[in-house]
Image (cartoon, rainbow, N blue to C red; front, side, top):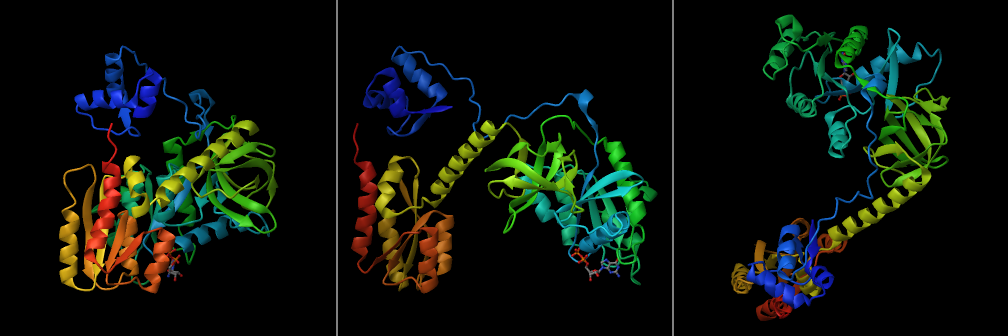
Length: 477
Ligand code: GDP
């Protein structure tokens, strides 16, 4: 809740300079293009005899309001499971073993499709497995606000025990509040030692049931396909306890698991429907992509007309490729289009802001816009003595004004790619004294939009920086 000074002034029919003066008296130093918060604005306005009212919080045009489900409408849905664990402990093998034992044998001769997730049936009940093992995918989706997983299977090799990524996986599942079932894999290996695994897991807060704890641990062998049935049963048991539910009778809400541009079919996205039912003809939006469901294909390659909660389906009909982790909702066509356009515009502004790095030429403008408070500089020079001279003179420009010069890095030698990356990360410009950028640095500077200034006279370098800074020091109100 804030307002730009210029706008505040014009709303009150006053000169900006009057407003700025009043603000200064309150100890608030701002320029005409900077913002003041609601409290400050109303204080000033009261001084001018104007009352200020806060607007009701505006609806975010890039968001689609969530539908609240009535508890009574919720019904049990299949659990969604992610397989995590240390590299080479058998995550992929376990996923394959489950798929082979449960899917192909049922669908006599059916070809399973890799669409990013698949459903298996055990005791007449469904379980959904996400096909990308590992916590990276899991975390990437969570970072985008999408919680896909209901249960995590932690795979630990019986002959290798708890390893760094095992611990990482435990922490990721814990922080997402996702319950863990442990699959102690490679039980067929001669060196298999499940008790040692249990011991080690106990040190990380996972105590097996047979030792008085509450973590389910199932010995399995992905190779020999032993223990798979029991593992699936344990998943169902936990799902029952967790009461995993959703309302199937509402507009669909789901998460994009994967998406790609298919040469023949156009944008294809795998959606895991979480709530509601997705139907052919539904108009949908996912991230910045919108469209109409033209066709849906399930994990067995069959065309389907609808997808209920916990069903992964490939969806055709989006006009654009969404990103994994994007939330998909079914909403009327007009809203879908309007919100997608708003999101695209928002993304553009964000991208522009990101690419708006410092350059001496627009320094003054950026300072005026309030974008810059520190002028970060990377110095490269031919000799240490020049670096010191430059550093001192540049720091001498700091006379307590709004913008301060700050040297983020200084070194002897040519400007290299790592200097450019540092400048990019710290929003700095690079000053080279009697040195030049090498080829890679030049390329990187171009793509990162980093301003590299080369000088042979120290005085000129100082002069340029000072002039750029002075630009902003000049305006008087
Ligand atoms: P991921 O990196 O966790 O996905 O592990 P993989 O599924 O790729 O398996 C790593 C290695 O362990 C592969 O060489 C597998 O053949 C082997 N492996 C996986 N499961 C078993 C198992 O149950 N028994 C044995 N002996 N080897 C296994």
